[in-house]
Image (cartoon, rainbow, N blue to C red; front, side, top):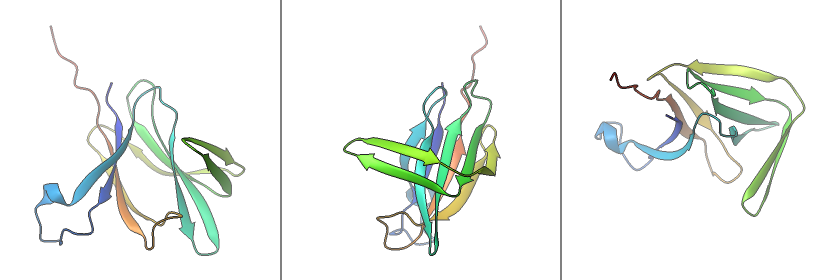
Length: 124
């Protein structure tokens, strides 16, 4: 099955650089996987960005939860959502959604791109 891919803009490549060098693949979520999450710090507010690929691979969704808590213990991450998930994007085959994210560890916001890539089925 095909994934929802998460790409991060490479800050070392100038805007006029080659397009294939501008983005670095960071993660992917496949149909049936648990959702992926990113923390997003916005000064007085900390959101959790949740991204998931539908089980039937028909689309991927990106949502924002406020408030929320996420915690990391070695290699495991637990996310607790206390608010409502606010839709940010619903992606179909080949569509992408860009946003700026400021995580707990990033010194400044980074541009991220979510891309839904549906599996191409072969005709027999």
